[in-house]
Amino acid sequence: MAQIREIKKRMVAVKTIQRITKTMQMIATAKFTAALQRSKATRPYTDRIRQLVREVSSAAGDVENPLLGGTRKSGRELVLVVTSDRGLCGAYNGSVLRRAMQEIRARGDGKRELIIETVGKKASSFFKFQRIDVADRHSFGDKPSFDAVATVAQRYMDEFTAGRIDAVHVVFMRFVSAAKQVPEVMQLLPLSLESAAGGGTAERGTAPALTVYEFAPSAGELLDDLLPKSVKVSLFQALNDAIVSENVMRMVAMKAATDNAGGLGRTLKRNYNRARQAKITTELTEIIAGAAALE
Image 1 (cartoon, rainbow, N blue to C red):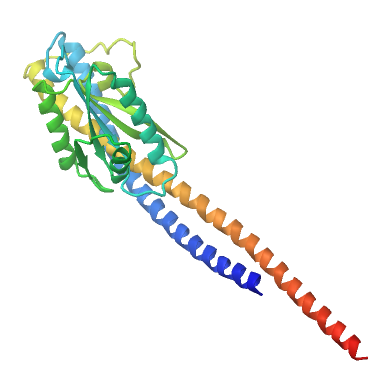
Image 2 (image 1 turned 60 degrees about the vertical axis):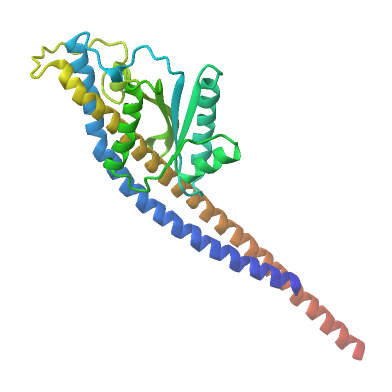
């Protein structure tokens, strides 16, 4: 009797968990759809402004800009790690944090000082456990606003142009498709023409388009306006990709959990029926044996 009661309690618990994971899957699906629409809406602008920067830079010739780099001697680099605030999203946070640690070990060679900043509570908790100091913690939520992201990007550009940091790298999960998400390291600063063209149709090593430009105002003034915008929209697009990846991986993880809970529930139901049948058979045997003893 105790075994039947125990199986019955487990069946109720598994059914409750299945309802919870099913609800979380539906919520993640809705958030994924909305985040994907936002990411797709910003992608054409991001790709076009990168391509425009490349075309203007190629047509203008040797135009100098502080954001394009040069010789840096501060010996300090910044790494921004983008994770989620919540768990239950499969291998999302683990993949990003492993890629971040690879980048930190590769760059922390003793010759450079690394400044670590995080987006999301999971990254902050991880680096606290690893006893790695975090300079700043950012939180943009499920719907990051461009103004908030642009403020952070502007601070990075100010520190870069002032010579306080030599480079800024962003570790995030790039969304390729619903079936593929790739942890990636993006060099946000200094800008290069090839990285500025990332996501466009031009391939590395191909010749620029043979287009004749007449600049009014000058090419330098145009780049002074385009390059900061390129940095801001690149960081904004990276955060949008990260949120899309987080929600699609949570959706997949919750679907797997729901299916596993359903399979476990069926197994428990079968064990419950077997235990109940065994109990009934035992009681019938005892009744028959008692009736035979009275004859």
